[in-house]
Image 1: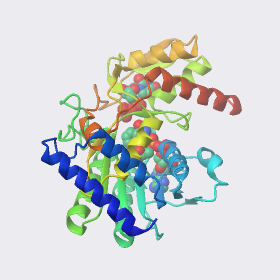
Image 2: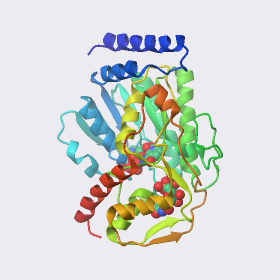
Image 3: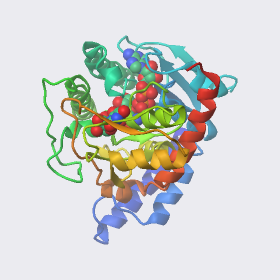
Image 4: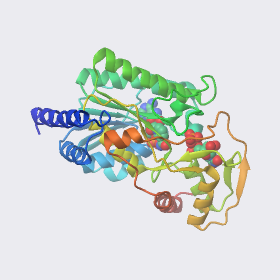
Length: 360
Ligand code: NAD
Ligand code: UDP
């Protein structure tokens, strides 16, 4: 479809937003039917989309979703935590390409949209080489923003609930400025992501770039690495192998877990918003649970004989975390739909198949 059709659609959507504002709805909140029409119209426009971190857990699902919507997808990855296996089923697709590339180096390609996901997400991986983690977030963001500026692409940043640190406001709203220890072992990730947000908003103000920032809360699903180190994959792998389930601390710390398909839907909806919508917007499932409850559900769903054991709580491990998703609901018309047991069962089935093929 041609550029002027896209412009017309944007114009229609802006008119819907204005009409909603005139009848006194909060800014950006539009009738659900207007949003649905907008999203279905936007999804038929074929675009060239760059996904950094495309061989990772979230990136591989996003590539799959973008291809299914008819877009051309270029994934880049340095395979630090990602695997070619995650995209093996996409390699024969005419509209898919993957390149080994490190985002800390400049990239010269022509694209319409960029999803910037490249960065290790699990504490054991991002703490393995903390200087590189800060670089990926800061230099990687600068490179992707520079690319977006040159080719006039829209660019979405995968930010994180970690920008809230160990939060004193609960559930976390986007206007909460966070409680991050700038010199602790998690800072390379937390502060790196905070600096990336700063860069996105400075490019928006200074260079009028079209930016989208989403703050992702704990997400899980197939394609997580079996040695990823994050809690859902750890518990499932331990349960399937009959090993002890390692709860760090006493397990009363809370998290809220979002299934990957729900999150990817949120990404796509955010990218399709009019230019005035920049975020940051929280994306996550607001169903908050203690980590001990997660361990119990995994044991029940795998019918495992594993025992729960307690290990020391890592430094700066947040005691509670749960998103307020009012903005995502109002602006994107988005709410997670996959219940915890359903998502866990799909993830367990994935790891069951995977562990059958890899040596213990
Ligand atoms: P992941 O580790 O599976 O994926 C990250 C991908 O980035 C991997 O494929 C890795 O090889 C790649 N990568 C790392 N450094 C790179 C570099 N220098 N150049 C190119 N590629 C590089 O993690 P994920 O869960 O898929 O996370 C994806 C993004 O979402 C990350 O930016 C992460 O911070 C963010 N996020 C994820 C969650 C979550 O719960 N999954 C929560 C908050 C934020
Ligand atoms: N956790 C745990 N056992 C594990 C891995 C993690 O109890 O084997 C805890 C961890 O200390 C944290 C929670 O689970 O309180 C979520 O950890 P994860 O690394 O998945 O995500 P994040 O801390 O970044 O939210």
